[in-house]
Image 1: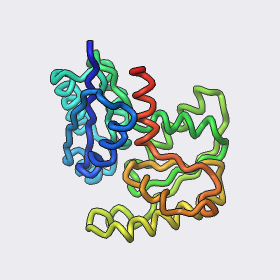
Image 2: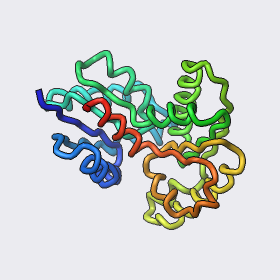
Image 3: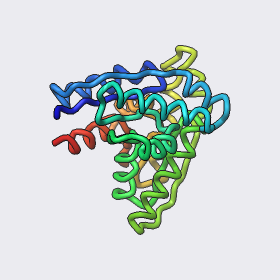
Length: 219
């Protein structure tokens, strides 16, 4: 049976982030995108993942499976717990976008920095890292930060301000930790703007690591 991958996004801006990665790492594999911005809107409004929002994501996952997907990647880290719960409800392989990133961070260092632009994304990412560290029997220290004003800047169309604020946070965090984790896929572009001296430690973002992991599963 041929494989079909569904990517479920909570922002349309994630489609062009993942499309080139799919073409590069999974050429010729059938895929489709599902976008529901209301999920992220509700998470922001509720300051976290509420049961009703989680149920709506599981419904989208079920619909993606009904549409033929046997691998489903949810690209929003804020939805992590709902992704895990949905695994009991369908036969398709359902993936959290941030799991490979968390596992790599734990493998790299003991002092792990987590940077986010939304509190609702920070908490599940930190919890995932601690869970992976516990599973590996490795003590870690997690240092986390929400970059105030960055999310508001990007949704208002001021991408330059978002990148500036996130870049400043990364430069500061890099002086304190062994590795930095970006809690949101949308922050990945900022890393490329930093010089090697401004990123003396690895800075991990989820999109490429998630698609590399998916490619490994399909190999």
